[in-house]
Length: 148
Length: 97
Image (cartoon, rainbow over all chains, first blue to last red; front, side, top):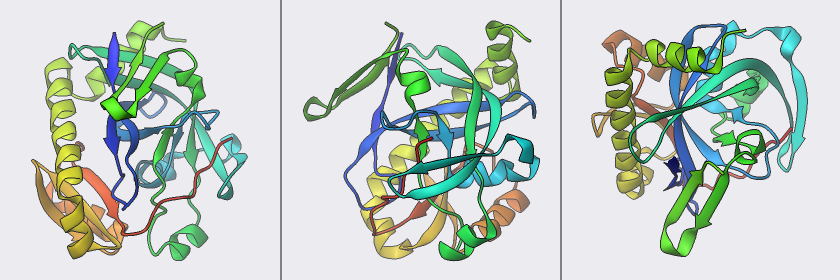
C-alpha cells in the first residue's frame, strides 16, 4: 500500500513541498471534505488550517480548544475525531482515524490581519507519519508513504 | 466506539459512495495539477486573491474568501472544487502543537 505524494506550492511562490490529498471525514458532524496536506515532520499532530478550518468553524466546541506554538507564533486549535481517507497507488481507499485532528481557531483578528483567512497549508503530522515509512527523494521526484 | 472499518465506510458514504469517492478524488487531483501548471500565470493575474478551480478551469475569484464561497454555494459547485489563496509571497507561518 503506497500513498503517493506530490510537489505542491500551495498557491504561493515558493519551493514545492511534499503534499498529499485526503478526504477528511469528521465523525461527529458526519461530513467530509477534500484537503491538501503538506507533509510536515515538524508537526506533532495533523492540523487543518485556512479554508477547511474556516468552513467547519461554526460547528466547533470551545471546550476542545488547546493552545499551540511554533516557528511562526502561537494560536489555538479546536479538536475533533476524524477519519482521513487517502487513495493508494492502486486507487484503493486507505483510512486512518485520529482521535484528535487540530482545527485552527480562526479569530476575527486573523481575518483582518490577512485580509481574509490565513492561507497556511494544512499539515500531515507525526501522528500519521510515524506509523509509515516516508520516502522523500526529491531529486528523483519520488515522494510516498508506505505501510511499514 | 465504531470500529475502524465502519468509520472508513461511513467516510466513503459521506463522499457519495465508492464510485463517487474515486471520481471526486480524481477530480480534486486534476484541479491540483491545474493549479500547479498555471500558478505562474495565476500569480500574475490573481496575486493576493482567492481562486476556485473546478474541472481544470478557473471558475471564480475574489479578494474575499467568504464572498467567493457564497458565489460557489449559489452556483452549486461541488465540494471537490479547489479553493486556494494565490500569493507571490512565500508562506512561512507554521504551527506545531
